Image (cartoon, rainbow, N blue to C red):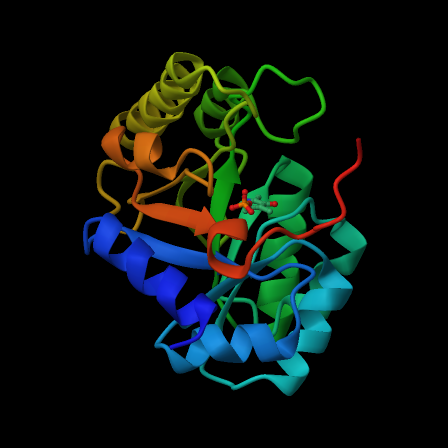
Length: 227
Ligand SMILES: *Cc1c(COP(=O)(O)O)cnc(C)c1O
């Protein structure tokens, strides 16, 4: 068995079967992706439109591609025909463009609302109150070509596991508030995408339904360490 298959096997034995594993393959080669594919992996995540398009073009058609990175509205149309889940919806404008492009493509696109839970200022995403207001005002009413499946968030990159845990709790509680107030009749609103290589075990303990794992499956993305 190769390393990638072995890493996946380890991960699968380490998270409950109900938690989906998205293999984050950004910067990784088609060969690496095929090693994961051949061990049964079908969900892959990328964070750049061009890379996603190129890989989708040459890799097996039954791969479910997730978009994880910040998505510019003018690039939505390049991925809309094939993307399986857009996890990084971070503005109402983007949601609206995904809806109209999906309409043109004759499909309904699954989306997650990215919520900003980390301390870093640079991370994209909605604030929980901002989202409550969007749904309160009915701004998404009539967007019939999107299916909002849940939320996604990234914790602060830190060794302080209590801080990470509390950020994941904040994401879970934002999910629950949205669910209670605006999605209580919608069984499809059921995903909490949280947890990466360094913090997925905490995320699972805090209610993650989907973890996004890159380096733990494929190895470090940049082996040349800066001093
Ligand atoms: C790169 C990336 C991951 C995976 O990161 P690892 O630490 O390598 O597991 C997960 N989510 C998003 C949004 C990413 O950009």
